[in-house]
Structure formats: C-alpha cells, structure tokens
Length: 527
Image (cartoon, rainbow, N blue to C red):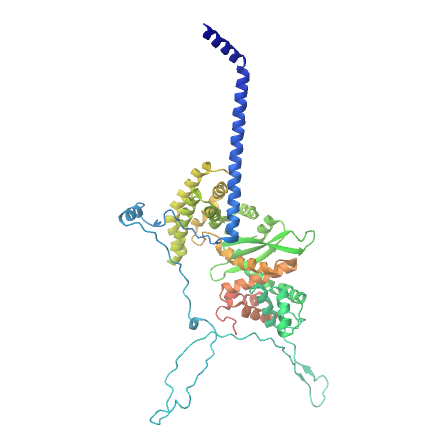
C-alpha cells in the first residue's frame, strides 16, 4: 500500500510538471535542429574554404595542366562496342597499370625550315689536293652540315637624296625635283621597316615601349621617346582601318564565329577612374581560306556592344556563358554555342582539390570520353560532314547519359557548393553545350579563341595598361593584323612592311582587298 501511495504521489507530481517538461523537450528539439542546421552550414563553409585553399595552393605551387587521368579505372576503353568487353578483357589478363608515355612533338630538321640559306665552302688544303701520283684532285661532292646562324639586327640611317635637275642653258622653270616617296606617316622620320619593328616588338615580342626606348638608346644611341613611339602607333590606326573593316565584313558574312573577352585597364578615360576595368574582345570567323582574328576595345554597355558589333550576322557564335552575350542571342537567326571547356573546368578544379574521388570525378569521365571522340575526328582528318555523323553516333548518346547523370546528381549536393554550382551550370546552359552536334563546323569548345586571346593577355602582363582609349584601340588594331597574318602563315614583320608601303598608294576598296592576308598567299611579302 505504501509503495502504491508513493507511486501515485510521484505520478501526480510528474503530471503536475508535465507541461513544463514537454516545453523543455520541445525547446531542446528546436535547439538540436538549430544546431544541426548550423553544423551543416559550418561543414558547407569548411568544404568551400578547403576547396579555395586547395585551389590557391595548386595555383601557386601545383601543376596548371587540366589533363584528366582516371586513376580509379585507367584501362577503361571508351570506344569498345561491347560495354562488357573491357571488363572481360581485364578479367582474362593479369592486372596491370598502363602508363601513357609523354608524346613529344616531332622536331623538324634545320633543312626543313623555310629560312634563307647561305652556302659556305670549306676547301681542302692545297697540299691535300695533290695525289701521291702527282695528279691534281677534283671536287666530286660535298659533306653537308646545316647550322643555325644568327645575325644581329642592323639599325642604320637612311639618307634619301632626291634628284634636282635643271637645264644647263638656264631655261625658265626648267628646275624639277624628284617627288618625295609616299609615306604612311609623312612627318615621321623613320622608314616603314622601323615602324614595323616597333609594332612587332611591342605586340608580338611583348616589349613595352619603355624597354624599347632604353634598348635603342643603350645599344644604338638612338634617342626616341616612348611618347613619340606611342603617337606613331596610334596614328597608324586610321590608316589601317580599311583593312580591319574588310576583315570584319568577312566575319559578319560567314555563319560561324566565336568570341571571347579579357580585361584591360585604361588610365585616362572621361568619367571613369583609372582603377575601372574595361574589356578587349577577340572575334574569330570568316569562311575557310579567309579566316580573321579581330580584337576590339569596349569600356561600357557590353550587352549593347555585342549586339552592335555582330549587326547583320546570322548563324552560330561560340562563346562562354557570359551575361554580356544574353541580348545578342535574343536576336532572330543567331544561335548560341557554349564552350564545354568552361563547364569541364569547373569539375576539373574540384577533382584536383578534393582528397576523395566523387561525383566530380564521374563528370570528368564523361568529358574524357567526349574529348576522345573529338581527338578521333582530328586524328583521322574527318571532313565536317563526317565529323557531324561521328558526333551523332558516339557523342549524342553519351551526352544524353551525361544529362541524366546531372539531373540525378543535383539533389545529392548542396546547391551553393562548388560541385552544386558546376552541375547547375551545365543544366542551365545545356542547350548551348550540345549545340555543336548540329553542325560539323562547330567546335566542342572555344579553346581556339582562347588561344588567340592569350598573346594579348601575355603582352598585357608586361605593358600592364593603356594610357588612353586611343592607345587601347591601337593595341586592338595591331594585334588584329598581326594575328590574322600569322593565321595565314605570314611573318608579321614582313607583312607589316608590305602593307605600310602599299597603303599610301591605295585609292579604292579593291586596292585594300589586295592587301588582305589571303589575297597575298600566292606571293607572300618576304625579303
């Protein structure tokens, strides 16, 4: 009875405090849920910070190569017709690890180089030319050895003397002076060769003007200020503009083009601080045989600028998924082709920084297979029609599988994590990423344009900025002509000498068209 009474008393006391205990339990559950949510946020923040640290360490000390090696399955054959063929083959053979040797580019011999050859005869001594029988020996052949030779640049003064003729009888108005040769910059006291040297040295050899100023003074005692050199480079822009316009017309007239952009700082611009970044755009296009590479500077209203530059264009434009081009692709007849290298790069950074191989590694496998297909087309020198068929047969099923994988993987990752952003990027731009399947002329990525904009980026690391907008326009003009000339196999110096001498004589559009690189193919302007 006593125990029963105690139990009833305890129960009554417990029931008395029951609401308080329930409230405390609910509060503890809410606090636990809050702490769990904070823990997930801290884990997410830690992962993101760790990812950033690993990327910084790789950027500072690691390899920059984006090559992907599937360490979990190095022997996988992505082109096997039977999906089980690789597994069966691996089961039959002993387990080995295949290491692909680094393939070096085959070096060309010196004899294959397109360089002038100077022959130097090394004679046999007079004593050895006489045989033991007393007969004089004859040259029957030569032992050849080709050596690379260097001859320093020659800087000299050119004194032009124009003849002045007159009648010896003193006839009135008989004195005549030979006309001065036409010069692209009449007031500049330098030859076209010297101007070409300055342009190529700054743009292609990446020598800032203050380096050239010091070099000319120290080595050749030529006092030429960087301000004067810059003024000449800017003054040439208006003279070269017709060539730029003709090449732009070629890009607009063709239905496949590409575009990329990089930053450039300009110090003196109206209503803009010196720290404000502007952009230089690189455009590639033109029909086969008339390919052009053009650069153009723009400081504001980038969406409107892109629309205006491609006014009249119809077809495909390969770009990255930059919002600068959003308005452009709203135009009828213009189709966006996105760069798969940009999408792949987001997964590649995660695989290099992550300690464990996960979903990012799976995405890289898909891209590895897709790039293998592109390498196959390049290795076999397939035509555009054949490449279209190959992509439809092999790339399209793989892309469909990859898209299903992206949709299935998105719910498994945190949306704001690097992996979540990488997957969402692919899903958001999927139509542009697979549009290269529509035409065999389209590229899988936009690396070709990135390679063309890289010379500008490397040169910018030396000259750092442009002083004025005119200077930025001059950079774009000269880079355009140099890269377009190199695309068609010309030495930029000789090409510039040719056009600088020819432009003062141009009167019509046809005269300028003759100076375009593809129209000079038959007789390249070389010394």
